[in-house]
Image (tube, rainbow, N blue to C red):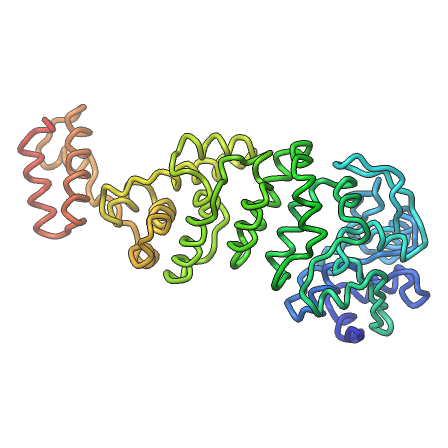
Length: 394
């Protein structure tokens, strides 16, 4: 099995990087996700490189070729090259010296197999020769790609002990690439070591969880994680995937794109306080935290358009989908939320005295306008006239 070497070389910036890093001398290969995705016949976004060159040599060669070199992870051997405006990660071959479940101390190497051995899954440990397209597979990754099986390299328990995040990565990769039953040894190891997740930063947990929930259909995998108690150490509020399954179906019915924050809300109790607590624990952004809490509020006491007006279209769509109203959610996507077509200055021109009464009248007009279905023309003019006549008395 081979990659189309000529086509890959034609991608923006790739040829310059290959020439600078001695690919024709066997010093540099394609590695990881790009190779995996090509073999799975899914779009390849970013191309990563592995090299026998030391980080300082990589920097020197890139700079000599007038390619920008950014030391994004130089302590661990990773340099980001920016060639023709296209970034690419270049990592020196490595072997682990020590690990503590969160970070590793590495030694640089020139051994391709040793570098592959420290990677997480067999499907991520594939290399390709840029000159010939030949695939180098040291641990059965090609067979696992054919079987759509996510499998750890070596002993799963040991691999998880090296990096606890691999538990969540296993489920994310299974949700994205796997078919059928997950690898039994991997699943049992993740179950046995689920408590290790407590040692991870909440940002890393949030990042993996959001990535998994953003996949087209993570329901089966999330249900498996619930059943295996994976969430208990860090997200004990998640006890069922039933609402998530309904939401994913309704997103499809409404032809509304999947959204990880909305889906996280489906996994939590419909309680804004609990959602806010979870968002704070995961250290989500302020925007995501507010959205999660708003989505978790089950209040649908107003009609969909009124809800969109008062709470915002995004929140309205979230709540409608979570409540099982996909048709109403779809309708909102094509409805531009109107602005109240009158101002305090206009009310003064109509005879009101400047002061607090104007603000009170505006609020009353706003409430009545929304309740009446956003009328315009004579109907709106009549509503305004009535409130002006009331003089802002509510």
